[in-house]
Image (cartoon, rainbow, N blue to C red; front, side, top):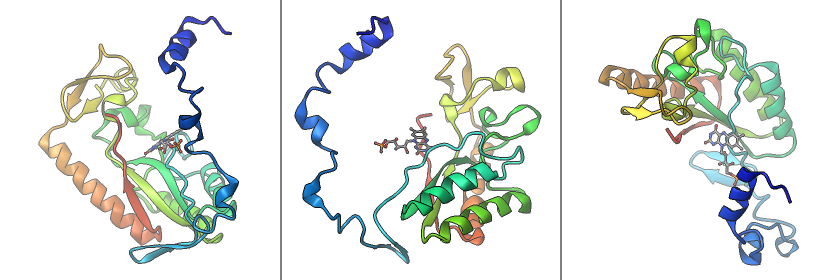
Length: 218
Ligand SMILES: Cc1cc2nc3c(=O)[nH]c(=O)nc-3n(C[C@H](O)[C@H](O)[C@H](O)COP(=O)(O)O)c2cc1C
């Protein structure tokens, strides 16, 4: 047994959770449901039909883009591979639309480490390639639009850009509580609302089927 103090704390915290057969078996794949007819039957959601019930959960695509925010080849290949594997609905990780509003999402020189869905045809063409690659395997694609990271944003912006991170209200930063997150002004909130609407419209124009709204911890 590892005697590392932190690990021991975690083990104590979870108690016998892992030993409790009932909890552990809840989500277990079982042969009782074989051949998973429901799982592999199509489902209609409003005007859209998804070929099965397999939905890829959104997982952040940090550094999977060009500095402009265009989804890069790595990101496109990553999603196309999942579509090829049979996923019915692909969901991207969070795509912030709060550049210039949430300081924690921008790198030095206003470059982006998150994929973006705004600004230019170059950026949009990356999304078109991603969607076309997934559609070729019959998958649907949703983008997860995010208002930003709020208090769980990277406080590095203080050093990189000499700007404080932001949140809905005056909050301590999650990673460095000594760093305050400044509240957004009404004007910035309005801009954010506009950006979210515009991103949703652009998503549709690109040929992507839908959007999620990201509700982050911050
Ligand atoms: C590496 C990683 C990145 C994630 N990024 C996002 C994200 O961008 N947006 C989101 O809503 N959830 C995100 N999540 C949460 C997952 O989408 C999912 O809800 C979570 O893993 C619970 O699902 P599970 O029980 O199937 O693992 C992330 C999870 C992981 C492990």
